[in-house]
Length: 126
Image (cartoon, rainbow, N blue to C red; front, side, top):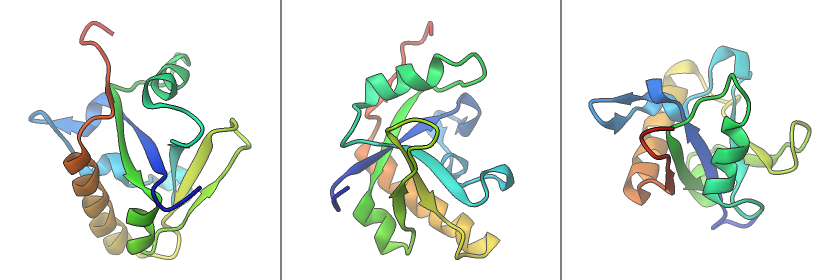
């Protein structure tokens, strides 16, 4: 990955409130062990990433947003490949930060992604 690599984040329908993506979409949950799952945009485009993700019956996404490796680095959030689940899988590592820091950093990532806008948006009937 290079600094401009876009990391593709799936947006669960529950992460949208009043038509806006919430910072929850960019915050790892406790089960994630402080690692936020994304796709490496150098290896897969947004639409195929969405198709790959939603093929599983338990995975829901209304679309894909993204942040770059450098945007993560600027927040002291290292991104690294994690090909165990699938080759394009990457993680953004929040483990060095407290809960309140994680929330602040997630808000900043959400703002960066929102400024970039949707990279892929699923059709309404899907």
